[in-house]
Amino acid sequence: MKRFSFLLFLIFGFNSVFADCSDSGMSFFPASKEISLNSIFIIEGYASSQETIMSFTNRAVFLESNTGEIIELSLQELHKGQMELTQAVFHPKQELKPNTTYLLKYANQTEQETNELKRLNSEENGYETIHWTTTGRKSAPSLNVNLVLEFNKTEIIHYGCGPSANAVFTIKNKSTTEVWYKTEVVDIATEKKTTFYLLDHNGVLHVGHDMCAGAFQYNDTGKYKVRFTPMNTNGIALNTTDWITFDSPHTNSNFPKGY
Image 1 (cartoon, helix red, strand yellow):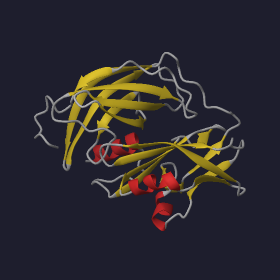
Image 2 (cartoon, rainbow, N blue to C red):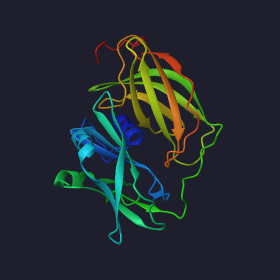
Image 3 (cartoon, rainbow, N blue to C red):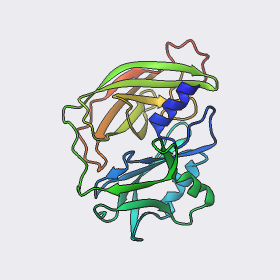
Image 4 (cartoon, rainbow, N blue to C red):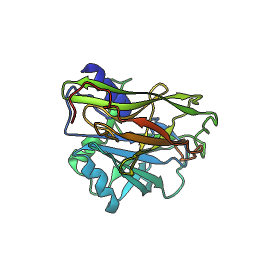
């Protein structure tokens, strides 16, 4: 169970680590606290916190500088995952100022949302308000054009409240900069496509779900295909990969079907 909690924190960036499935949780990207002047932003909600994400379709989200300047964020994409996870992608309406710290805020922010606008600071062994500090760069470093994603395996890992199910990909030639992977998964039988932005951990990308939540779910049997568009935190992307086909992770699992 401890291993699961650690993986959940790393893969989904939840700002709290828990032994059992929580009823809410938020994630905020870039994961790095230092950003360029034209960074884009991803806010992700788990379980009941998905309501906050959905409210952004008619609700202002903005950055407030340490001098009180307001930078409004424009909602560009909204992606609803298949298992208790939803994310919104924002672009700032104007360029940020260099060497400035910005706090993330919402219009008509509730007390619960204020409490959720925090993340773990492992160095200080506590939580801190969500913020980013700009550098003098207009854009984040470019990605390595030789970046490659290779299919490794599908896997089911059993936990007390249910399994995780993932297609696992190995990333080669990754640069040190933060990389977002716009991930499109298609159920070949139904042609239904689900899109979500994922982050890797130590050069490994998990496409699926963990015990409590995830962007993608799989049927007991069937074939799927996936493609990736790697990009930096400014949205400057490499070429989209070819489609990669794989079987449902449940196909060869001895875990009871329907989980």
